[in-house]
Amino acid sequence: DKYNLQQNEWLEAVYNARRQWAPVFFRGCFFASICSTQGIKTFFDGYVNQETTLPLFFKQYERALEDSLEREIEADYESIHSNPVLKTPSPMEQQAADQYTRTIFVKF
Image 1 (cartoon, rainbow, N blue to C red):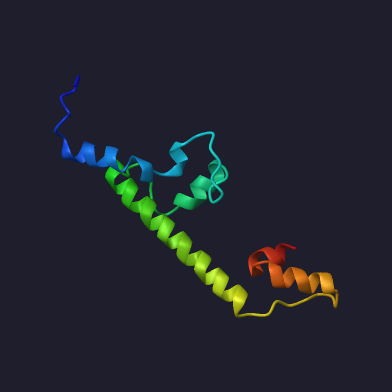
Image 2 (spheres, rainbow, N blue to C red):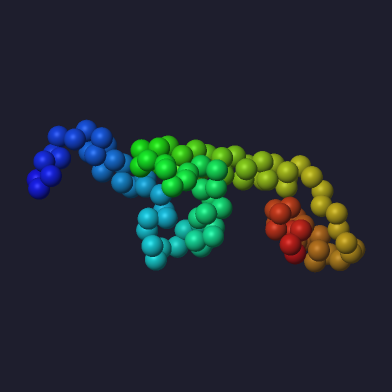
């Protein structure tokens, strides 16, 4: 009321989409895909910068999520359709190779 924005369509659309806003706005909450400030910077790298407007931010956030999902699908495909190089004949190593994605197994 104070700013006479009751009929502002853009602001209303942004408000109605508030549940889809970037998790980075919810400080103090856990989000598995974004764990820290550095993780947030990495997640948005190449998508937003200081000049990014709020409407463009939402579009870029959605694009970043889609690209992240695509990378995850590709990694899953690679894990399912490839055989890791085992360093030992240990059954435990084989079990780990069967259970973990290739990315995590390499760290193992």
